[in-house]
Length: 112
Image (tube, rainbow, N blue to C red; front, side):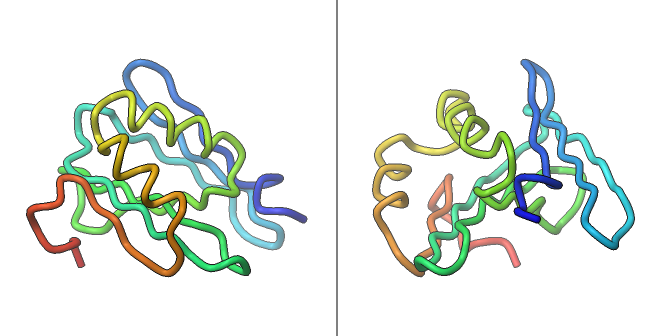
Protein backbone atom coordinates (compact mmCIF):
# COMPACT_ATOMS: atom_id res chain seq x y z
CA UNK A 1 0.00 0.00 0.00
CA UNK A 2 1.40 3.39 -1.01
CA UNK A 3 1.59 6.28 1.44
CA UNK A 4 -0.93 8.24 -0.64
CA UNK A 5 -3.45 5.43 -0.11
CA UNK A 6 -3.64 6.02 3.63
CA UNK A 7 -2.21 9.52 4.43
CA UNK A 8 -4.45 12.33 3.20
CA UNK A 9 -4.04 16.10 3.26
CA UNK A 10 -7.01 18.42 2.71
CA UNK A 11 -7.33 22.15 3.24
CA UNK A 12 -9.65 25.11 2.93
CA UNK A 13 -9.27 28.84 3.59
CA UNK A 14 -9.00 28.37 7.37
CA UNK A 15 -7.34 25.04 8.09
CA UNK A 16 -5.34 22.07 6.96
CA UNK A 17 -6.71 18.62 7.79
CA UNK A 18 -4.33 15.69 8.05
CA UNK A 19 -5.62 12.18 8.51
CA UNK A 20 -4.36 8.69 8.15
CA UNK A 21 -5.42 5.10 8.29
CA UNK A 22 -2.07 3.29 8.35
CA UNK A 23 -2.17 -0.40 7.54
CA UNK A 24 -2.12 -2.29 10.81
CA UNK A 25 -2.26 0.95 12.83
CA UNK A 26 -4.81 3.16 14.50
CA UNK A 27 -6.56 5.84 12.40
CA UNK A 28 -5.75 9.43 13.35
CA UNK A 29 -6.72 12.97 12.34
CA UNK A 30 -5.50 16.49 13.16
CA UNK A 31 -6.32 20.01 12.06
CA UNK A 32 -3.89 22.90 11.73
CA UNK A 33 -5.15 26.44 11.28
CA UNK A 34 -3.29 28.50 8.68
CA UNK A 35 -3.17 31.38 11.19
CA UNK A 36 -1.30 29.20 13.71
CA UNK A 37 1.61 28.28 11.42
CA UNK A 38 4.78 30.11 12.47
CA UNK A 39 7.40 28.34 10.38
CA UNK A 40 7.65 25.86 7.53
CA UNK A 41 10.58 23.61 6.69
CA UNK A 42 11.09 21.45 3.62
CA UNK A 43 13.39 18.45 3.94
CA UNK A 44 14.69 17.49 0.51
CA UNK A 45 15.62 13.82 0.46
CA UNK A 46 17.37 11.57 -2.03
CA UNK A 47 15.71 9.55 -4.80
CA UNK A 48 14.87 6.69 -2.43
CA UNK A 49 13.13 8.69 0.32
CA UNK A 50 10.14 10.99 0.10
CA UNK A 51 10.60 14.70 0.73
CA UNK A 52 8.95 16.09 3.86
CA UNK A 53 7.05 19.25 4.76
CA UNK A 54 7.26 20.28 8.43
CA UNK A 55 4.67 22.71 9.79
CA UNK A 56 5.54 24.43 13.07
CA UNK A 57 2.65 26.01 14.96
CA UNK A 58 1.94 27.88 18.16
CA UNK A 59 0.15 24.80 19.53
CA UNK A 60 3.13 22.52 20.16
CA UNK A 61 6.94 22.49 19.91
CA UNK A 62 7.06 19.53 17.48
CA UNK A 63 6.28 19.95 13.83
CA UNK A 64 3.52 18.27 11.90
CA UNK A 65 5.31 16.09 9.35
CA UNK A 66 3.70 15.75 5.94
CA UNK A 67 5.38 13.43 3.45
CA UNK A 68 5.15 14.82 -0.06
CA UNK A 69 3.87 11.43 -1.24
CA UNK A 70 0.71 11.87 0.86
CA UNK A 71 -2.45 12.44 -1.16
CA UNK A 72 -2.97 16.21 -1.46
CA UNK A 73 0.54 17.16 -0.27
CA UNK A 74 1.61 18.63 -3.63
CA UNK A 75 -1.44 20.88 -3.69
CA UNK A 76 -0.80 21.86 -0.07
CA UNK A 77 2.78 22.84 -0.92
CA UNK A 78 1.46 25.24 -3.57
CA UNK A 79 -0.95 26.74 -1.03
CA UNK A 80 1.83 27.14 1.54
CA UNK A 81 3.79 29.21 -0.99
CA UNK A 82 0.65 31.12 -2.04
CA UNK A 83 -0.08 31.97 1.62
CA UNK A 84 3.43 33.44 1.94
CA UNK A 85 4.49 30.82 4.48
CA UNK A 86 7.46 29.76 2.32
CA UNK A 87 9.41 31.84 -0.16
CA UNK A 88 8.67 30.91 -3.80
CA UNK A 89 12.31 31.18 -4.95
CA UNK A 90 13.46 29.07 -2.01
CA UNK A 91 10.76 26.50 -2.87
CA UNK A 92 12.24 26.15 -6.35
CA UNK A 93 15.71 25.72 -4.88
CA UNK A 94 14.38 23.11 -2.43
CA UNK A 95 12.68 21.18 -5.24
CA UNK A 96 16.03 20.74 -6.99
CA UNK A 97 18.03 19.85 -3.85
CA UNK A 98 19.03 16.54 -2.30
CA UNK A 99 19.58 15.85 1.40
CA UNK A 100 19.10 19.47 2.46
CA UNK A 101 16.79 21.32 4.85
CA UNK A 102 15.13 24.61 3.88
CA UNK A 103 13.14 26.71 6.36
CA UNK A 104 11.06 29.86 6.15
CA UNK A 105 11.48 32.27 7.76
CA UNK A 106 15.23 31.61 7.49
CA UNK A 107 16.65 33.80 10.25
CA UNK A 108 16.47 31.19 12.99
CA UNK A 109 17.82 27.69 13.44
CA UNK A 110 15.38 24.93 12.48
CA UNK A 111 13.19 24.06 15.47
CA UNK A 112 14.27 20.88 17.24
